[in-house]
Image 1 (cartoon, helix red, strand yellow):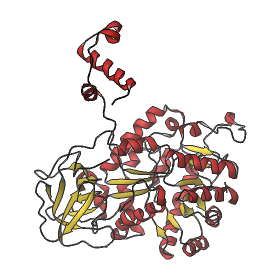
Image 2 (cartoon, helix red, strand yellow; image 1 turned 30 degrees about the vertical axis):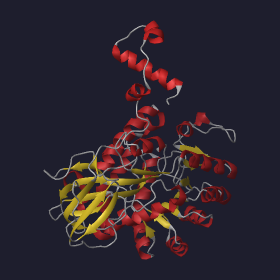
Image 3 (cartoon, helix red, strand yellow; image 1 turned 135 degrees about the vertical axis):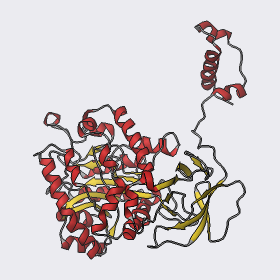
Image 4 (cartoon, helix red, strand yellow; image 1 turned 90 degrees about the horizontal axis):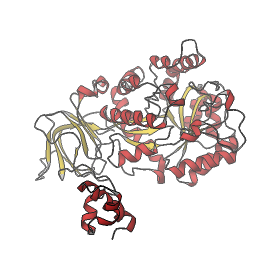
Length: 485
């Protein structure tokens, strides 16, 4: 039975729809409604996934499975609901399945960006710091759909209040990639992520920190107890991991790159709180000092590392630490005014990337692919091009393995806080059906990922087909193999 309040609401909506105007009519004269009539006019409790055929069958495809640096022979792949059910060299008989004839094209896993900022990628700096939160959210929704249409079916969100957008995507309200959210990036007074002005000071210990705090994009913490509190707040909101800014940053005006922000005790407080919740801490750190202090405090993943030395790389190898470096486009510095301290800091980081990638290869560090594009929708469009630009250090097969199965291995560090438990980044039986059908062989022509509008003829995420340009094959945009929420 519906509750009395829901009945009254539905009754009013139903009467208005019939054109019965006036408060007296609503209050007294409306006809009695049955529960069935009320339910017919009530909104669904949860948005439904698109109505779809029971299965999707890819035929005549060659597979890059996300791990092997070569293609399979001709294969057929059956997707049921949101998982890959069967892969076979023999024909698969599945009556009622929507058939997509790959005609020899390459079927590969959806791409994963291990360092993305869902809320920060689109708006310019001024809008992010001072704009209306609804405006920022709408931009983020637009950029999420664009990321998906570039073939990025999963992102690891490394700072920002992306929880609501993640929920809307998961409930099929808007289109976008899977999001592994870190929540607010936790920082210290004058650390990277503290975007306050001088007139915002002083702050009492324990008091709200800034507009960024209020919006959930950053969180200022200046003691082990505050760090513990801020960490638990992100876990409360649904964080899959925790991010601290352990050293200075480029975009923060009062945060020099050489600064060491948190104390060892503060970092340990976050690590302990995250570990107790079955997940992990990643830190933003450029310099050797910031990286080494974080490692000694129990951190498992280093974001950037652009200014670290060889001894630090050796330590990371010994401790089995993950590295998430970035091959920033030089144009990213244009987000900051010419001659500004922020642009100078960016150039220092940009120039340090070459050594970092070479150290990562030399010491066989567990390295993932992430872009960290900020404040520029135009640069975000180059998400795949950034991956393709890294052939200075890696072969195309190495890059594609990194951006699929290796990134997916990192995502599993979220453990009990993993929002999508299961296999991502691979084409294998039982894995999530996050798939790209590519017109060409990306293992030999990595530039194909830089032109997704032409190269990716089918984009599927969680069994839902969001793009299909093959005439007469299967179904159109928004279709799936019975995707479930």
